[in-house]
Image (cartoon, rainbow, N blue to C red; front, top):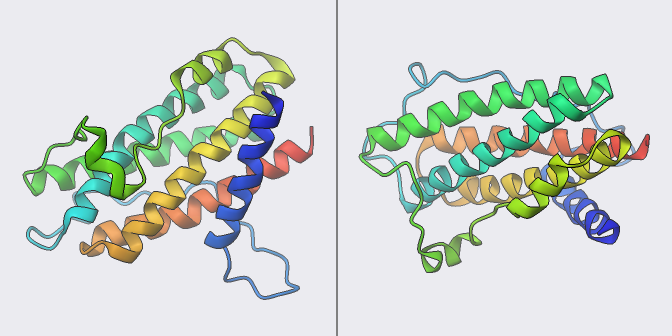
Length: 204
């Protein structure tokens, strides 16, 4: 199990590096805040007609991804000991709640379902449904102390790495400007969160 967690961290380090590749060689990476300023759905509405299947699938897949992330950060808010972790997950929960509200609003504007098609074949070209195994989350909930923090940081690093991958595709292939802007913010903010969590792991 320990090797599994370390493999997650190693894989996501590569994803985070790709998302933050704009830093000049030899210069220190700039600090990235754990959460970006929320963008209210009422002031940043998605224009009807200006979207494609990639936009729709991205939103439909990201909403449950956010819901599962919220489940994990709430566990961390209760069980983590270090204030740095508590501060991080508090900011993440607020940001993701606002993002989920925007994403749900856009899908409704477009007359699209807010839930993803349960048929797995539908998502093959989108990388599949990126979800953390519920059994692993249940195991996390049973942990405490330093063990909990280590498991949480490793799992959530992988979770946010999946968000970066989904958002990168929406940036490349989506058509809706507001959705692409949201996806770009997700790439940057989650890459920053990943770097923070890897730093926290290194301090254990």
